[in-house]
Figure 1 (cartoon, one colour):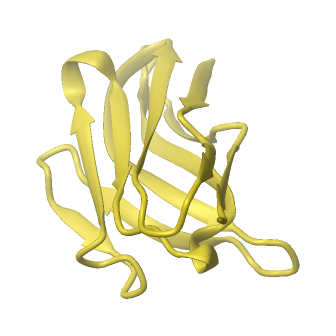
Figure 2: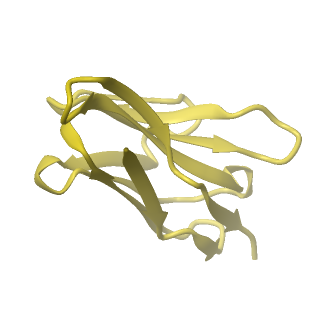
Figure 3: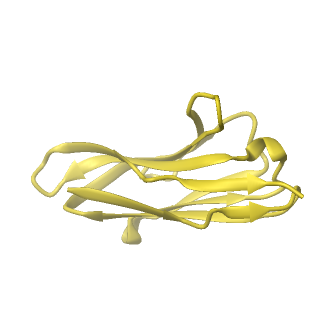
Length: 120
C-alpha cells in the first residue's frame, strides 16, 4: 500500500506565491514519474507538471515560466512552487506518483487533493 499526502494549499492573492508538497510513503521500492494535476469546478482534471526520477520536467503551457516542479528522491516528495499566480489557477491540486512497490508490483496513486484559491 502506498499513500500520498499533500500539503501547502490555501488562499493567495493574484501575483502571489504558494508551495505545494506531496509525500509518498508505504511499501515503495522506487518511484518513477511524479506529477501535479488540477481540477477546477466544472472542468476536467488537467496536467500541470510532471517530473521523472531523473529530473526531466514537463509543464502545461498555461503554467510555463510561473510554476516549478521539483522532487527529493530521498524523501519520496514532490513539490510545486507556484509563482505569479492568477485567478485561473484556482483549483483542487492533486499529486500523482507511479512506481514499483516493495513486492515488485507497479503502482499509480493519487493524493487526496489540496485546494488552491487565487483571489484578492
